[in-house]
Amino acid sequence: MPELPEVETTLRGVAGPFTGQVMLAVTVRNPALRWPVPVDLNSLMQGRRVERFSRRAKYLLAHFPHGTLILHLGMSGRLCIVPADEPAGKHDHVDFLFGNGHILRLRDPRRFGAVLWAVGDPLQHPLLAALGVEPLEDKFGGDYLCRATRSRSAPIKNVIMDSHAVVGVGNIYASESLFRARINPKPPAGKLSKPRCERLVREIKATLQDAIEAGGSSLRDFFGADGNPGYFQQQHFVYGRTGEPCRVCGAAIRSIRQGQRATFYCPKCQR
DNA sequence: AACGAGACCTGGCAGC
DNA sequence: TGCTGCCAGGTCTCGT
Image 1: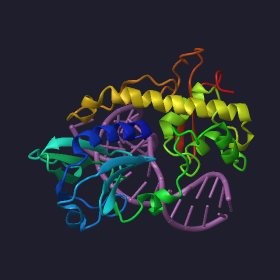
Image 2: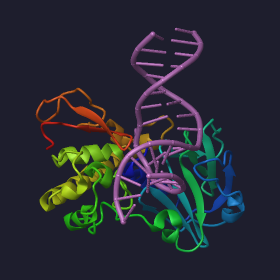
Image 3: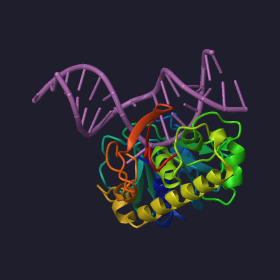
Image 4: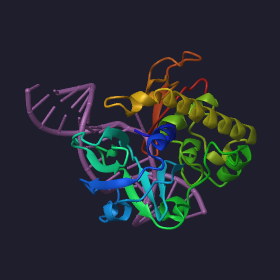
């Protein structure tokens, strides 16, 4: 479910209600996520106050005085805010009960998500230390992408999805950004000209930013019992539109497989 | 160093 | 209706 815009939206939705709150109890119903949830999580966190929330790539971080809770939503995870007495469903694996009487609940049917605890600088955690630049930061520019791609023979679409190069560009936004930049997803990344790198960077930023704004505008729905994330409602240019007419030129959208993932593109607009 | 394939899981849907 | 097979928004690990 979550790509970067959704994680960012989740961060904003969670930071408001829970920053400064005391953790009363952690309930782990199923520790078998991508990695085992630490068994002593409750004793680690009970009675401690969250100082702030932040995000690195698609990881959500809850900072405590003595360590950091690291959350990842995987492919199907979401965080819900529910009253303390709300019964748990089949896929509600971890509950964080806070002093404000609300539970922050991790629901993750496919269990690709993660709940981890880091002592010391969380950015030095093995999962975070090797990550590439944040796409919305200034450091991610045409220069950076150009340098990062010179030695790469993999298709440009695969490389912008490589979290060691740049984080947070998932399968949907990779296709959408390439369409907006009018760049074909297939050629080797190393062949992309400097101006095209510049354009691609610009469109990645704009695509993600638009999606965050769309997600932010439906925050209430997102956290409601059956709410859909906002960006779900936005119209994609190419993603999931195989055979349908391109919104710009009318040509039929094509789909191919790259790196075992579906890629969507317009054969006429994207050269 | 960089690439591609495989792995982890469950649910939904198309096709028979 | 029920079964089978395929697909899914992530990303680490391993063999080449």
